[in-house]
Length: 272
Image (cartoon, rainbow, N blue to C red; front, side, top):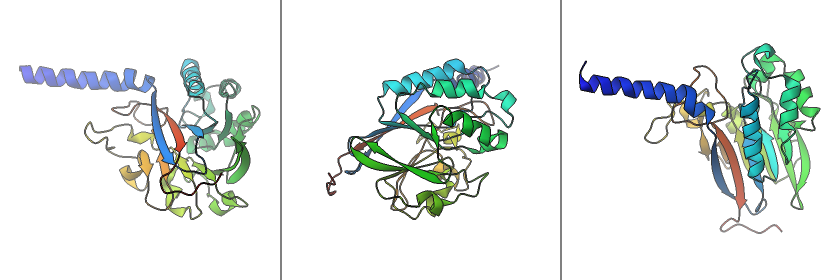
């Protein structure tokens, strides 16, 4: 074996070990500063694509602890709590919801395709038993730092028939929108201050230069793999998510806790 071949094989071995055992078990905090005078000073933490295995207790504890340390005003959960397509492969729902109930900020959620492919109603019931409001083509109005904010949840585009107009009914700006699947982006015609989405896992494999995904589970391909999207008058943030699906490894694509800080906008009118 040549020296070059040995180095190549060692590199492949490192990538596999890192991708299976190291990177999936790390947590990266990704921060976005969004200029918006309506929501200035508000911090949102977005968590999505948990894919919680039976014994993922420590992983979920770490996610909750790290989220609380970020001092969010609200927490939004983007779905796919279930692992696989059978609840026997998923963390006990009562334990899961009790652990998520340790989030110190008000928490809202939507469900993902894995949840509906297992038992969406059971997952929804478990979350709501712990006062985590699940928004499936619906909305709720809350007060954050003396401001009314409408939180809008759009149902999963893969397993449900997303009723976007129903979700937006009787809402006004400012609006924070959450949807599991980013593919509904172009169908949202109402103004949103931010749209939060997951589902793609960032592609799970990112090239070292440019952080471009090799592929993504979106009909728009790697364009919707991760990051800030601004192709209409609405901004959308797609998180890399927290768990794994398909090939069980991540390469240059660490599990992500997404933080959205709304900051004072340049050339924007003050609303308060």
